[in-house]
Amino acid sequence: MRLARFDGDRLGVVDGDTVIDITETVPHRPVGGSLHGFIEAVAEGQSGALAFRDVVRHRLSDITLACPLPVPPKIIAAPVNYLDHKAEMTVEHTVADLGVFLKARTSVIGPGDTVVLPYTDMRFDQEGELGVVIGRRVRDLPVEEAMTAVFGYTCLLDMSMRSTEDRSTRKSFDTFTPIGPWIVTADEIPDPAVLGLRCWVGDTLRQETVIADMIFDVPTLVAYASSVMTLEPGDVIATGTPKGVGPVADGDRVAVEIDAIGRLDVTVSDRGAIPYGRRVGAALSPTRPMAHAPSPHS
Image 1: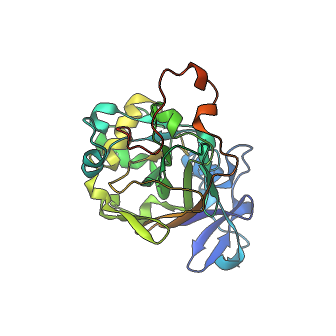
Image 2: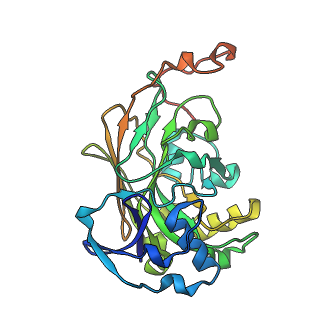
């Protein structure tokens, strides 16, 4: 199934060019939204959540898609998970040495939303990625069982500032984790390794890869993350980006498309941006990165 949030917090199953509204079949959850509630209901074995009652259909063109998971419990990200990106960034280490890092869950936005750049004079890059959505609470999963914890997949953009700050800082600004346009359940994608990924800025294709080129494949990444922390329903794992990252600026359109999932489109704005030198704490910083200069950080 392709599960989408739309028109606020309605929940629907995308069926061709229509959406089946199943909002009333899902138990209300005060936090996380309708789709998060659906994932938790399935994890708890509430099979009734899957029964479509009093079906109402909407044309996809008549609704407004919303972020599938507006308040994920965690966003877990894999740095340097493609060898071609390692070469591109001229770094020594990969995910196998670096482990994973966390992004702020408040950085999430959805399809058609806007990435807001915080500074006027720093370089910001797009990073197109496969997003893995966790479906049940797990800890210390062996690689052979890791896929049993996967609820589904989505498109994800890991927007990044190039500077000296830690990854979690540079990638956690509000709006820096677009996901969507929906979540495709794992039964629809038996092997994510075969999926192709493409990312555009404007009309320029910047990134193109096959998920099979990842250093940590999806089962290894899920198992590794579960060895570090408890995974919970609704957690999102950003699986890393291939080569082709590059700067984005005010007015740019960014899109990531993944086979069997869909296409996520966002725009970029620098409204409200300030010079990097005026950031909180800047006066105490001994050095200042060169604006728009390449960085060894990914």
